[in-house]
Image 1 (cartoon, rainbow, N blue to C red):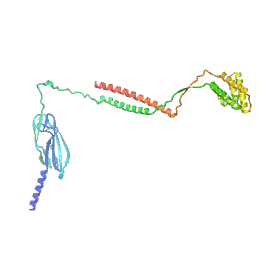
Image 2: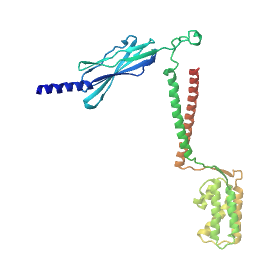
Image 3: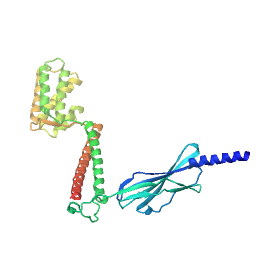
Image 4: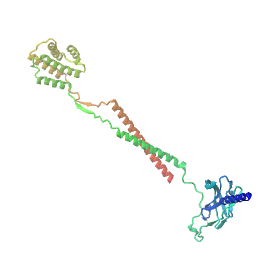
Length: 356
């Protein structure tokens, strides 16, 4: 009795297992034109550890007369419930004869046992050809060269890339130049007074201040001799302000006549006595010395000297560096713009030759 029950359970288990193992066949389309391709998918449902063997076709082998297998490709496995797995093989088919083909069932071996799929049908269609008006169709063409060769276009392409990079750098440098404000220093032309004009202007001021009749002779002679010293320094080019009266006279003796020097010597002698020996002078003596100073200036003045002077601005080191940097930027921008323009002309010319 136990053996009979065990046998029944074994038969039922085997029946359930065999009922779940199956093979399916599907085709993308049942109609194709001559020369088109279609995919036939053969799927086997079996246990994960089952050995599955799909039909093997060599390239150009016929699955049925008139239907050719071009390629076979196995798809990834797909897990299912109850420990089962789906395995698929895709066959690429084609045909060159217009007719309806019967695709017989395909056999898949699972653990050595054959399982067959259902049969399929494939209809191959042809294109209607108007043999009565053959002129409307173009004849066969010869083999033609590829109109596009990278070797012909590569130089123009890379030169275009280089041109774009140079233009970007040029624009960036232009922005730097625009943001860096220029240093504007104007050159001024000023009119200056000649030495004798300055001296006469100071003497007129001495007269206006009535220093000749002032009781403070020391102040008068100090002002008068300082005026002469400044005039001599600018007129003859030596540092008369730091020299003694005798040193000034000795220096002038080599360039002036004795009459002019003698009157100037007397003036400086009187001034030294007033300033250092507290010598008291009379008003007429002060007048005479003032006239002598005016005569000396009139005898030695130079009127043919330019009275306009060009004053150039003095730039700091930072300003000089800034100006130098702007000059360099202008030069680099001009150079890059020129190179970019030449590259543009060359690329356009090359493209014209390639397209014509």
